[in-house]
Image (cartoon, rainbow, N blue to C red; front, side, top):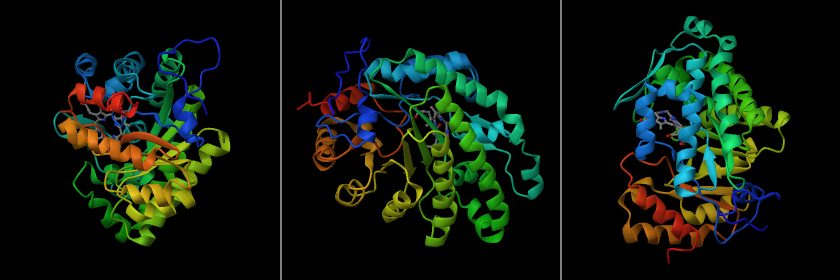
Length: 357
Ligand code: CP3
């Protein structure tokens, strides 16, 4: 497939989108690139809008501002994709759980621990908040240059449930394990609700203009075989099937972070079109075992991007050498860190596009 140069932003003819090409199996010596958390605190223009917005959730629910921060990294760096600016915790918030983001500490939720808490959630009360997110998608879709693809997303049911039950992030999200072992029926009911709501939420994003979906399962690591199957693979399979029943053409990227050798079963059973590979996966394993099945995305260490210099260049070259021979999207292995200098991002993109050697 021919890829359109980035400079062609307004052509009357149809311009190919390199990201969609890679997701359909196209191979390019200069693979498409975007970065998880590309809109965020490392950008001064983001911090400026964030300060004006009030709370983080206010930013997510104000389409004029959320679309502006979605577009900022695309404008600054000429990336191949924009990812909707929102958060995976918009879903519990829209369901009526109390969610807030504490400066310097991260998300805090009033934990859901018993069936009464579950019954108090309002799956029907979500329209207003999801509408705001869908409106943001629509505004971004109108403003994007043609070769740039628009990615919508949600958290996988398991990962969203870890925050809903634990009430916050922790190094291992251990709280949910107690539920998984002590009261699996309760957890199953929560996971089922999240799966169902997430199908609607993603379908609304696609209807508004999202062309690709990514499912973030940040806490998919450390699960024993049966548990991985029950809490990660099964709900994700239902989520993917639910979206594909309505939108069979829209590619889905799965990100079971930390799943290690279980990436294979995840690909086979969830029927995602691509996987986002975390930093811990070996390039040999990605190239030899995963890339022959689906397109792959990843997996530069965000810390190395923060550090920059020759080590960054060498690692970028190593990733390209290992993965650019098959369908590949350059990305990080996890989200970009707030202290990342913007010129390291510029340097990375230039190198991936072949201009930095
Ligand atoms: O990638 C993007 O640019 C799109 C926006 C996006 C955000 N969060 C914005 C955000 C996406 C795709 C997410 C996903 C997300 N959110 C995940 C999955 C990916 C991952 O990182 O593992 C998770 C687990 C969350 C939950 C969440 N949101 C946490 C734990 C935190 C606090 C950590 C932090 O960096 O502050 C957030 C807050 C958050 N989400 C910020 C941004 C830009 C920073 C908040 C701020 O600007 O004050």
